[in-house]
Structures are given as structure tokens and as C-alpha cells.
Amino acid sequence: MTMSVRPTRALANDVNEHAIHFYRWLQRGLRIDIRMENDSSLYYQHRARFNELIVEGKSSSRESSELFYYLNRTCYNGLCRFNRAGFFNVPFGRYSRINYVRDFRNYSEAFRDWEFTSGDFSEVEIAKGDIVYADPPYDVEFTQYSSTPFGWDDQVRLGEWLSRLRVPVILSNQATPRIVRLYEQLGFRLHFLDAPRMISRTGDRTRAPEVLATRGL
Image (cartoon, rainbow, N blue to C red):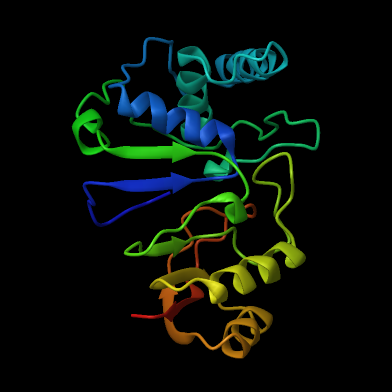
């Protein structure tokens, strides 16, 4: 999740519970104590420990969130990928240098009045006066962002859910032909732009056509 605005109050929901646990620790003023190096042996040790904590039911622990940060900074192309068993399975990355952050205490004030939840988007309660920004996984082959894939049926379900909301809505996604057709048919206004690929399974960093679909603005 990336936010270029700073609302004083917000509800951030993600189906990936590990990302939400990390944000909750940021809210508490996380300071990372684990060893962090751009080293393959250490990476696989930490990956094994992270998955071990999942098995032990400790994915919400501080240690798990520290490991989650390290793995995402160090893994291949910054991917966040889990297999169907729920284990993080991205291989070691190919970076010459990584700048790790240890002290996140300055996030505590910014997130003071935020609420972080993890679950299906349809479970989020929307109230009058809200503004909804939806940023689902790109409409691409890779959908294993969590243990539950986000496929085309989910893209359609999200679009239809957003179209029923009676509050301002903004959605961003890759401008694939079927995504464009979906949101045109649902009555959204479409705005197109070229966005840099910040994360890619293949390492491709060329610009990707992206669409912003809006309603009620």
C-alpha cells in the first residue's frame, strides 16, 4: 500500500494479513532488532523462521513483522508471494546494495488514528462521507499475493461491489482490455497513464499502461 496523501483518519484493509500486521507494528512505533544483511544464507534462514512462525500461529508477532520487512526488502524483485499452504516462497534477490530501515517510530504519529484490518474487501463497512480507494493486484498472470489467489472472478466481483457504493470511489489497475471493458460497462470514468513497474516477476521495469477508474468525484 502506498499513500501520497496523509489522512488523519483512515481504514486500510488488505487480504494479506502479514502486511496488515506490519502496519499495526508501524503504528506502535516499530524498531527492528533482527540481523539484516543482503546475504543469501541469512535470507533463507529468515524465510524459514518466518514460515515457522506462521505454523506456530505467531504471524502477528513483532518478530514476524520484522522478518516480513526484511524478506520483502531482500527477496527477488520485491515480490510478495505465498503458496497455497500460506508460506512465503520468494527466492533471494539480486541487489548489489540494500538500504534497510530499522527505526519506524516516526510512523506512529501518522498512523495514530488509522485502523488496519485484514479480510475480503466485501467485508469492509462503508459509511456516508467516506472515500474509497481500491488498489487490487494487477490483472496479470501472477495473483498469489496471499494464500488465496486474486483471479479474474475477484476482479469482476470487486468492480461490481465498487459500483454499488454510494460514496466517491477511485480504483487503480493495469489497463488490460478486459479491465477497461469492465469499468466502462460499470459506468466509471477512466483516466489512463503510464506507470513504472515497481514490482515485476520477470524483472521487467518498462512502463505499464495503468487506468484510474472513478465514480462520484
